[in-house]
Image (tube, rainbow, N blue to C red; front, side, top):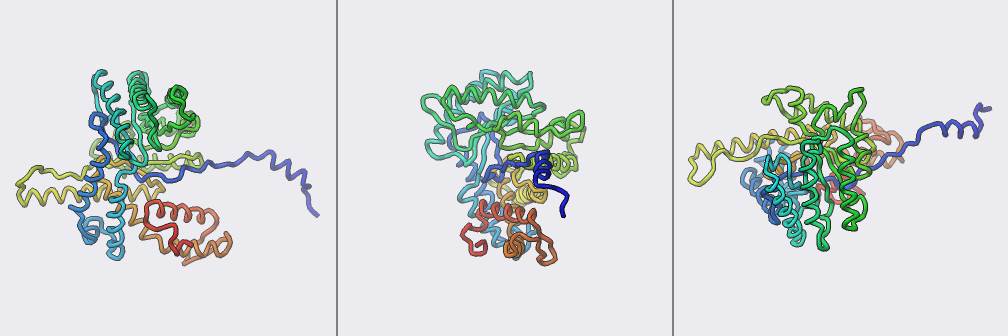
Length: 414
């Protein structure tokens, strides 16, 4: 005998909310690199890739260098070193933003007008020469009232020049909006982009939006609720990613410059809020930037041995800081971040490939045990897995394949 009829069960089900997560887009890049709009040209991305490759070759010529600089296990150092070289040879710069905000600084309106038109012209030239990164876009100034007119004019000039006379969007194109404080700012950008798409007969929603959260109220509202879901909704389906603006955030709390680090616990909390409040909403999350640049202090020819040694020490120290920040974000489930200089890219790649190399064998064993038991909960090597962790293992393998750490045809994955 049972208590509930099938009609009663259906009635119960009707009162429950629908649950439908939106998957995030596939193929999230490992980073986004920003560069001032005044310096952008059709050859910029190729030049940055050359700098990244040369920096790695000069400062980490062999696997022993990785052990010395980053302290990674000797057993996997050779593999990681080879993988970093391979990735740098194929795709050193995955995502790039032509920056009309901090990277450009304060300029006259006439100068910014010129930079906007020139940047669009150079973008078209780069597209024709297959010289853009797989992901690409621009960052405009904030849409707060003081800077909104300038931001919208720059957007208009750039997009009009880019799309005029049969021009087209670069693949995976996005407009990044900084210092967002309200859904209205994102909704305004959505309206502007919709008008441009209509004007140039582009498919609606093709121009994606990414935005930076840099103020406390962008994370938690005055009444204590999460704000990011309302920001995502305001983008009207355009939101592709959300980036942490760490240093503005820390400044807003009065944290002194010497303590403004990505490892600050305020940043840990911000990343946690980003994760909790956006899960299932179909967006990428990106960590902020390491502000220690791996650039030699001494320039030019004829450096003394002491100066060469100081340069090497400074570059390796900056790499170590960046590697630790990347590692911290990866441990928190955030696999993308900012690189402010192409010489930072190798340290990020070391962190990414080391993470996969350290975990791939155990993950394969756990996944094989899990799939063999047809999604029942399993115990492998003292680690308990259920359907939820099974999904996590799949995500790990997808990341490894996207980076080229393993091949989708690898027999171990079959």
